[in-house]
Image (cartoon, rainbow, N blue to C red):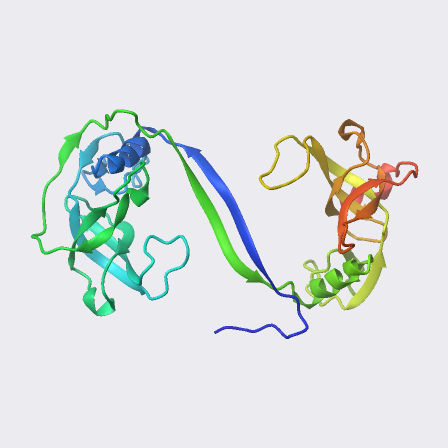
Length: 319
């Protein structure tokens, strides 16, 4: 069921994206390099089962696994689901089936996609084969997809030493999530107030804590927070970190300081960047004020306001 937010609530598309980089051990390295070379590898467990994709430790005994075996490029669909509307970045641009395929010689199933004209052409138990990508680089996408194939089942395995020229030793997997974000009534009011250069939180009627940004309910007491309270604009740095790695598409020179800032009157600290002071002079207790963005819709960063540092006892409960 799709729930449509009321028209007065803010909504905006949001993309969360980052590259996930990882190094590979000998088993995963051999598996991915094998894909580049059109070779499908599994690993044998202590009980003799063949796992594809291979893992480095036995899921039953936790023993380290190193015995690699080559399995067939044909297999059997064990279960499936039809995808009528492929999304950006998925393996095929036309409707396809997600399938679990038990390759000949393997005891487990590999998740991939099946190129089929429609759901009526897919069934559990059907025989399929690998369609290799024309250009392969040592990734699961070296298998472009599976395709229907009339062949006998079964087939054995053979030992493989896992040795290849120029082995793949690491991968970068882009992670991306696209969705429409609606902040809800409490944060919608908060964002509208920011556009007026005001910071407004909400007070819990039970414990009296003022939440900034507001959450609509107190997570401690479990009651709605309907009492709106303007806080700040000045605040106190409660703790901070120095950022030395430049983020992609972020036009800020490193190093810079990112801090927790307890605005005056707030019951917890919010996040903000500190500027207008050398990074090595930022400290706990530093009194700061907001510097608004060029369009005036939100604080771009916070800078020292010239007041004496706050006493530790005044903000220790907000760490």
